[in-house]
Image 1 (spheres, rainbow, N blue to C red):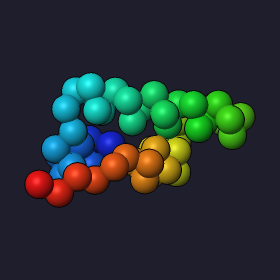
Image 2: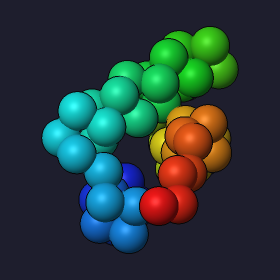
Image 3: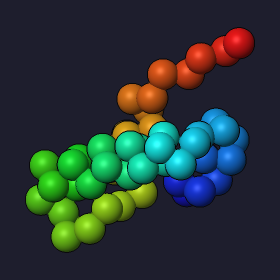
Length: 52
C-alpha cells in the first residue's frame, strides 16, 4: 500500500521514510506486533497534500 501511495503522491525517499516512521509509531501506540495497513493509511492521512 505504501509503495503504491508513494508513486501516486510522488513521495521522495525521505517522505516515504517519514510515513513509515509515523506508521510504526501508530502501531506501537496500538500495541500491535507489526505495522498494519490501517497504520499506514492513518500515517498517509496526516500528510499534507500540496497542489502546485
